[in-house]
Length: 150
Ligand code: ZN
Image 1 (tube, helix red, strand yellow):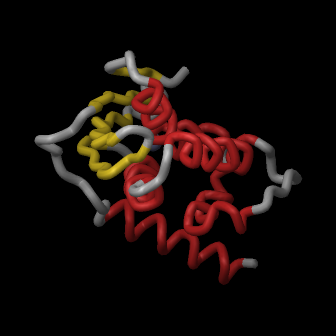
Image 2 (tube, rainbow, N blue to C red):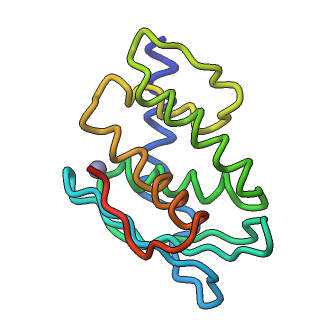
Image 3 (cartoon, rainbow, N blue to C red):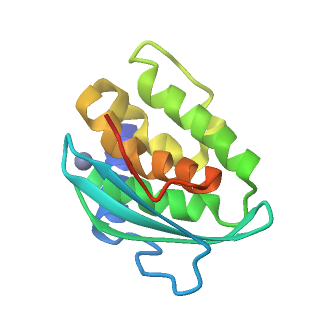
């Protein structure tokens, strides 16, 4: 398992250092600010929604490696998906993070997002890994311009 754990950390470090889709979006149809005061992570999520489909995702902000890597992987994972597909992925992701060490989830459905499985051992980091997803959920539901995790 230790080799696997190292691999997962490499992916998180890579995305944390070189986040994908880290840019503003002029044509964004939705923009939501997410804030995790526990760690100080703050990000702005931009979406281009066409009907029910997310056509483009980008973000800006600053935070720890886990929060940046999570937002980066979120942007890669959610492009081209529908609201329902993204909410289902978030439900699996959230279950993986909060289910506890003994809890096993079907990580096959999560693809690359399974790299955050180890985070469930560190409850204080769960908010870091889930911030971008809570922000995405708020963006998809509309109405809220900023959210704060508690
Ligand atoms: Zn953090």
